[in-house]
Length: 305
Picture (cartoon, rainbow, N blue to C red):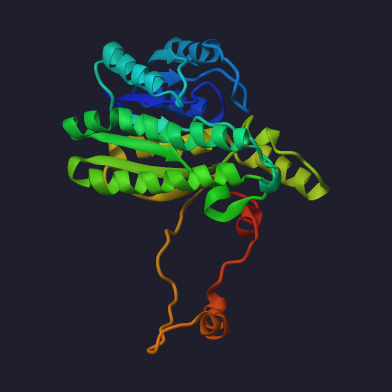
């Protein structure tokens, strides 16, 4: 018996990295899996290939599971509609979507091209919208459904050179939160995961110094895609039926629940504020609670378990 027995799960980006591990584990846990992957490169923009998704689907079937491959793009609304139709036609249902599909187009913001901005927003944020929009009414009507979306510490905390990626990933957090709130009465859940894992996307980040090289080596050895998949598959399953609207970090064998924006400190002035009194009184009073500009490595500064 598995936590996804009798369920149908769509996994996007399912041919490599986290997506592949999610697809394999979902099948192992009893799900019938639609393995979606465009089969393109990490930077996107190429035509892709059906082969990688088909290879994972074959591996699932060889292990005794049920799977079908799909090579549409999450950035295409028509393509996503075909994914949903394929799940319904092949397996007569759909109960969860795990959506780690993504690309990277890193660069300092002042050097970033419009194309690099648009492409990342299109795949990550628009892609998340597309898969959620295509399935939301089906989930509401059957009063069961789980979206497992993927954010990043690049958005939650920050990483230099990833303005496009960070913006998209924070947008996904907001999307997930509202879907969770609106879906609560219909048993439709949505959660986000910020993963730490060595994947081909992470492998594209340049190593510029010894500290970066050591950090990369730790990621290779201690933070694997299959560890992230454990959390994603659990959240997709009825075993986590009371978990919705949350942000998690999966890092090696560690799972963190992340905070969400709430007021942390306030100050009022009876006679009202002026720009000068805000600068001279309000800001100094709030400054002890300011957040620094350290990147993700400044927050997660210790080795994973």
